[in-house]
Length: 280
Image (cartoon, rainbow, N blue to C red; front, side, top):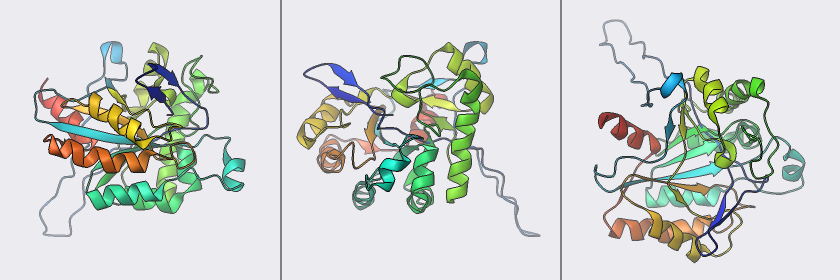
């Protein structure tokens, strides 16, 4: 999902060039060797379905459960951007991932299936690193509602297949356990989309802090917007796309130490969802 938000302008612009990803299938219980004790692998935390069984929507964790914050990064690439990648445009950002590793910041990467198809080695490396978790941002990064920042739309009868196709792309790339979380392209959804995706069994993940990193070149402005917006339990939306979010890595190098000075602890989305479920 691509969002451009500037605090001074209070405006939001989403380009079809940016997208995001990530969500999973449930892990299975491990099969021990004969005579070994059974080790159950727990399913990642999810929220209970909403009214009428609609897909639940998560925006932030508990405000009273300590100073935790989840940085999330949309690894964006739409279904029709293959020619641009072939021409040399970079939709990945390995330097950002390396910086998160160096700073020891857990993070959740919402990845489109098309991104995983384009960068399978990077998707596999992120997905197998316990510091990160990969969640679903659709395969195509087409909108799940009409009038969503100019994005093409997915027909209602193709929404479920689009999400499942992303999980298939993650598996093909070698991602072992994509999470059961889904971020709508553009953050756009309605009751019909929530109803349609209920059969997939995911929790929809939004955010309460927009970094404004999409298309931004001023890393200090991005960092300031995040630092001013974060509260305990916040979910910050950022991007992992070199060409369309070039200032993100520099902003992260400012954001992380400043939030740590304020006593914040970085967590993955799964930890915030688990804490939310415990408070119900």
